[in-house]
Length: 178
Length: 147
Image (cartoon, rainbow over all chains, first blue to last red; front, side, top):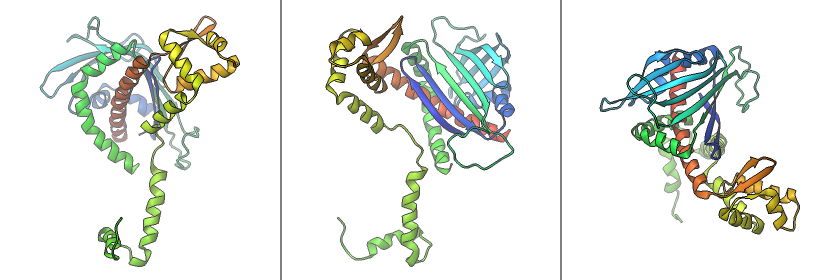
């Protein structure tokens, strides 16, 4: 995995992050389509996610909870606005109660995921040779309705953020070897 | 400044397994390789450069001052300075890129507004959100590699 581009747009409160994978597009799609895979990467190891409902169709929902180190469960939900396997996914992500029902007045973000074969892309020209395996480019855009919503979402995840900081050290070391 | 005989230079020796004669070549190659492996990133210095560049021009400073008080259309701003609409437009682009003003289309007008605090807050939050996604994608890549 390599992050190849990050765009921050403070005027639309949108973060767009593009990453490259050596795996073919169907396998990258499975990371979203398979709830057992999804729960292994959505939350950090110290705040693991458990997916209790997963219906990857337009109008379908995902319900999950993340378990804090103290054992508290924080519920969240996704609602799919558009699903087009294996290239595109649009959904909203918000806080929920134990049943996955949205909590009123809590922030909701919109997430757009786009996957594309990257074998023909020139990309950053890192000279990976002519493999028969095609890689995949994934672009994820996350948009918040307001700065307040973004602030709320991020401060709610503060404990999570502290755990993430520890994980970053591994990422930095891995990046050095890339 | 460090003066003194060669032992200081030989301090390199502990983990250098090459013979003394080739040491300087190894050293030079390391120096050359390090910068090429550094990923291109927008550092704080780059952001500061853009900011100072944006504020280094009297017209641009005046645009910031005026738009801090109230919003202005680009055409209204263009009437205030002895220069073309296109020239003012360019100044606005530089200010936008530095995050000092925002530009928004309203009907046929382009409205310029300066709200440094808002822009600054949004940028700080986006930085944190970026870190959340970088970590998440790190895990995404690891799980994918196993599957």
